[in-house]
Length: 289
Image 1 (cartoon, rainbow, N blue to C red):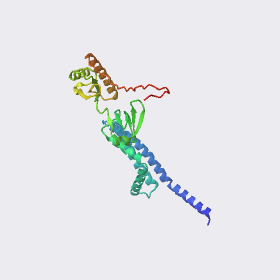
Image 2: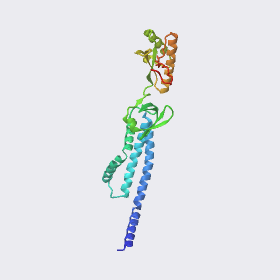
Image 3: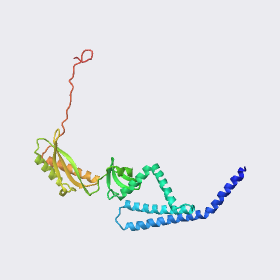
Image 4: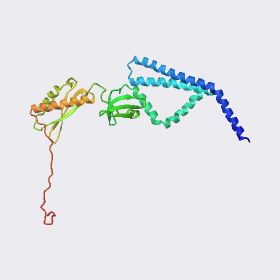
């Protein structure tokens, strides 16, 4: 058996098949180039149409991605059928289904984050610019992609959070409304008239600039502490963390000034000290019982 002749025939057959497939490959390449051009123009048209609406930026990005993805899938399917004429849409879809299952198991986390990103973008809540708190991460949402969410922490660091984490766990949106309730605890001595103290605290907080007493101002006698009777003071102010810090600073200063002016004592907590009895030492340096 002439192995060299057999190999030569195989190579010649492959070369002949490649030359015969060149026109189909050229057509498939043209189809892919046209797909790229159509996808770009379709994305621009989608941006123009969506730009006239009030859809959130993250949802606009999702629509843009889906338009591009749909056009590219159609273009790749047409190119594959051109290169392999025996391939039909039915067999192609069947192959894609089996392949999708295999790829889904292999890249489960990636697809999980992708689907979570789509659902997050479709939500009405959690917009770009909101301050959120999730699983110990507190910061401002800067970007939402199909796989991850970029959160800028209050201390300046950027945290990239997988979308599945945000979708599966409770998320507190601190800036969902322009105003939210803040609170502070203040204690007065036991010999204080509590009604008078509550009135002094209320009048002091009402004079603070930036709070909204119309939405409600609460001064509750909360509990008997070790050295004081504690009041829980609650008020409404801006919802951002800085608004909360600034309003709490003003409220604490105002309450301290008001209580001082009314000569109401804010007591120190009692500290209990334990003293050990000294035992005289014996001649050898040991303690005598």
